[in-house]
Amino acid sequence: MSGAAAEAWLRRRFMAGRAVTPVATGDGHLWRQTEELRPAAVLVPLVSRGAGLTILLTQRTDHLYDHAGQISFPGGRCEAGDASPVATALRETFEEIGLPQSHVEVLGSLPEYTTVTGYRVTPVVGLVSSPPTLSLDAFEVAEAFEVPLAFFLDPGNHQRNTLQYQGRTRHYYAMPYEQRYIWGATAGMLMNLYALLTAA
Image (cartoon, rainbow, N blue to C red; front, side):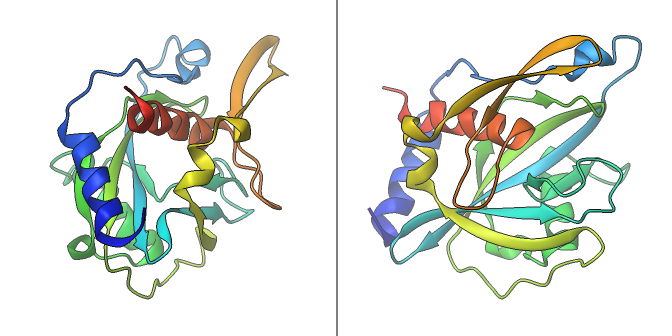
């Protein structure tokens, strides 16, 4: 599907209001049992292109304290002036990559995801029908790029791996794309998007 047909399909999937069990919810709470997780939000931007829908991702710069160099969605921690996770996601997205709120049609949210860095993240899904030229914050964002949604909807591209971290075994998802390694929280949120978009 491409163009208007793909956009209409995407809207219908979110309007249907299906209750989908999350595939991944994160394990940050296991390392932060005595701490209150900090609220944050990210935007999952689905971009309408002539050839079909894509997902816009960013690569974080190498000097950042949290998740340095990793592939992520634009977003960040909630601030006192944010009225909702949606407001946080849209504000942070504009600050990081220059995507104006006026270009984003908010479709809904995915299940919360907790990160080992102590955040409780709400992924907000938005449709970008007329993507503008982006303006990246060079301090936070090394690069922005798009991946076809069809790649993430193919189960053959999903990996579930393990690693040892501070004496515990962690399970995480990964979706390597070309020379990029998409994993961790970003891949977990993409798995939840996959579950929603492919539910019967």
